[in-house]
Length: 455
Image (cartoon, rainbow, N blue to C red; front, side):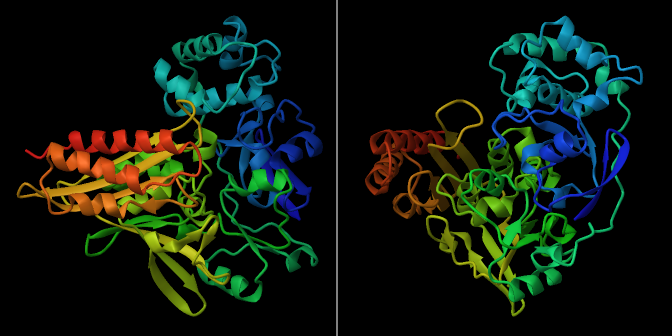
């Protein structure tokens, strides 16, 4: 496959395998060895680079998705005389470097932050660098380095990153055309799905890339839908009763889109709890649903919000409630010729309360050990609508119907709060650490209900 990319403001035309990782292209084809490989699974940040100004993990981006974009690596930060820039010098001056293996990715993560937030506080710096691991320097020195660069107006001095405006598709060989498909519209996608049953759909790659690296999956044919603009929109319905979220909307979009922030703040928060910045910039809402993982976070809050899914095939569209979509671990009602195009979420009642909780083995960047989505409407001293959903308990996220039944139509009193918490304990059947998961879920349900302001 012939791809056309810009790296550090220099144009390259390369003949590479469609699934070759950007990390390998940078290191092997371009001989830019500042970018390192650590885990190869998007966990450590050693391979982080900027893609059109956004932080990504280059170990998770295939060549097919690199085409037509501009990338910045650590080599691109030096001035024309090879001297370090302000940020690099700050890392040196503040002793933010020891072995240096993690440093290129760490610096690029800091650069991505300072481009958007010229003068971040310490908490924002921690969040921005949370996906970049360092085992020897110590984070305090690194944080001080970023603060030094910020104080020297580093972010304000950076020229806007170049977006490579290239709408041409990569050039495929005749052989590659038999197993690589790059549709630009939904209708083209449906055609490929009809013609090829054994096809693997690629989007943000945050789930499938680690599986490919660990040889858990071996795609025979690939269908890349990540660049289809029709799947990237977030729209208010004409009757203003629901939001339609495109299946390839990223977590970052969900975190900051004004419609999500206005109507579905719990979804925005849930998206912010999934991975670090480089993952959030790539992971998609559709992928988090389609993988049907018991530990997925977004389906939990979407269940509580009453979401529906729109699946399309060459025969037409069908709408399925999310609560009926999962049939088992990694199993759904999606047919092989169907594409998840839209997640439809009804607008909450004007005074509804919505909340997402997540508990893991550590404070940040962790798979859920327990997650809980909550939604409640209250009128005339009684609960008129109530939905709870739990994740990381069973094979897939599930509604807590018995808890809802114990509250619907009743006043929000200590008696009914306790009854609801007891129902959760009785009807949850966690696969691991059942006593711990039940007790934490009980406490989260009680916390949510006791914090509801019904005055």
